[in-house]
Length: 429
Image (cartoon, rainbow, N blue to C red):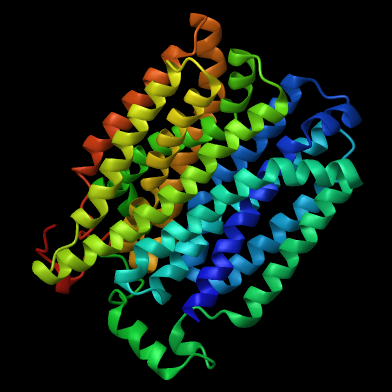
């Protein structure tokens, strides 16, 4: 059943980014059919980002309260419907509305996955599972442009969105039928696997807050862990979203490439991002096992991979800025995205560590901050380029954010839960 869970969430991560990036692949056809300018298409892209960011925390809270089975099945069905409705729009205003709702629907995906991980995945497997899940989004991003472009050429952009809607609905039904929120409630799981999960997962706590005078959201706002996690994730997404948006056109302009040439150079970093997720996930679990055996503490199993990743990202983004050829620029950016994606597994594992039964809302809050970073990137690059006449300023700001994120990880304590538990009082990492 753990294998089913990982396979299902990996495919969901792939679908998440295929549906998300499809609008970029269909940009020319959509703009032509609806008579949209580049500025209007920019608002179409931004409408998704806004909906996605604003609904992270509410959807995470919903996953905690209702369980990831119903919430993930529901939100995938909802966003799939809005993916299909994209094919039916006939004006700029309706496109903005549909894409905003699509982003709001997708918002609960990763927080819902995080809540499922808390109940199903033993502590010593948490890192690699998170790494596998996020590698799916990178593989989805790398494959989407050529695959979806071919599908659009054959069928048109409207039928393509309908096909993606049907795929999402199938996933939703399979998940609802086979997944259960807790191994205890799963009749078809083997006894040996059930005993293994219950013996090795994090201790379950009640849903009450530690202080009856403060709400859960107040507890999150006051948490230094959550604030630091959110700030460092802003830096991580600031880098990655540049790879999804502006890296492609700036390569074309800077080196005089064709669209196909630039797409290949752009896909390389996405593949390296997937590898970075696997490496970091494996490293998180290996360090956890060693630390747990030697001292019973495991905070550095999250810190070391994240700090290493941010350092590599800072070096890579500066190297890409000064590269003389498109290949060199892409290779340096491969190092950058490899490093940036090394930060995902420790970040999301820490959300589950400290959030526990509130892992959905904690991870949703962190992801909301990260997607504000994505939104900022989409505006910062063109405006800085216009103001300074060069992209160098953007690259240095991105590097500085990554260095600052390293400092934040020294303030993050994965062993300090959002909801204090007497069994863990006084534990230090």
